[in-house]
Image (tube, rainbow, N blue to C red; front, side):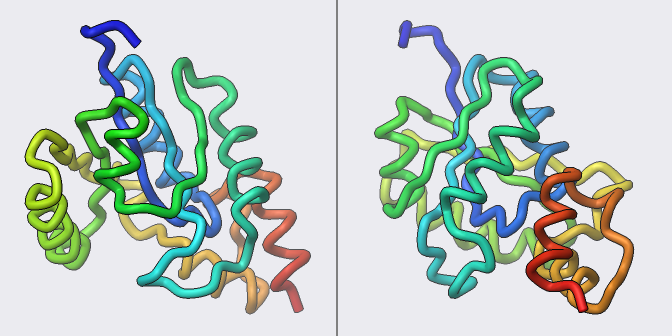
Length: 165
């Protein structure tokens, strides 16, 4: 890593990755030299994941293969510790609605207490993805809804296998 390399981490559970996540990751890849998609191994806030960390990493790697400087890495530490380990000074997060802001604002303040040198950049969701959430996608899949335009193809197939009726 050179001193002028700009590295960001995009942390999340990505259970599963959605086209909204991919939009934020792609936009971050235009702003930074390297974007590390941090896949939290055991999310505390969301509980048990539908897909294991290896499968979530594979979904991300396939979906971001065309993006320059993007990699996917598992982590199970504080996000600021993960950022420091990767040489990143920026955490990139997407915001869909005011409810996201309230949670993310609290996380930002806690992260800054842990490491004031790591900052957070928020990207507003693109309008066509402002309603997408992994939990909403899983609910649609569980009840036979159409998800093909909301997640990458491989993810849609696996969701239908796991949750389809």
